[in-house]
Image (tube, rainbow, N blue to C red):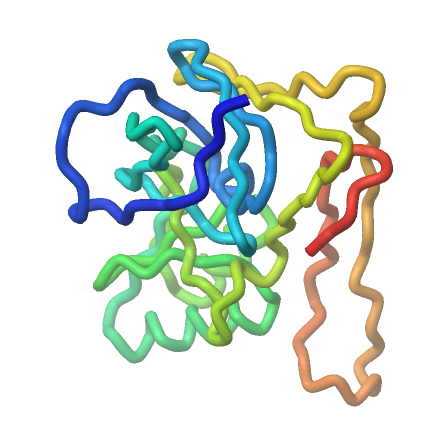
Length: 213
């Protein structure tokens, strides 16, 4: 199978891409995975370490062809505030809850969450639902977002087929999905320094037998 071992950042490459890989944010944080493009090109992404592919990046196949990375629009909340100081305060509360956030000058974007939406309005922020590509701030030490999950599938490689009109994972028997929830349960005196007034429920899809990097 043909492989791609290099990400070319947006603005650093030219030419006509051979195909397009349309992915949501979590599926753009990968290291090694068989991927299927909109035009049905199938290739093995094989990076030295996990990396985030951003909208407009290109993956270079070993035969020289380029695959355009396209960020699939996601359901987000766009946040503005009356002043820069107020926006900083909002950002602090989001960070205290370990929520991935995208910084756009005088605006912030996070994934849609009705509980967080109510909290933000209580802080005086203006919140509007939007459908847009999501590229949250990366970690300070070169890692992805706090709750981002990179899957190194090793022997259980399986194609992810994505297009503008569809987003599903075809894993076959080796990659059956399961879901789990987890809750941050901290008392007021737990000593962790975080405000835990919001209980998070996360619905993650994981293939069995995968190693998380």
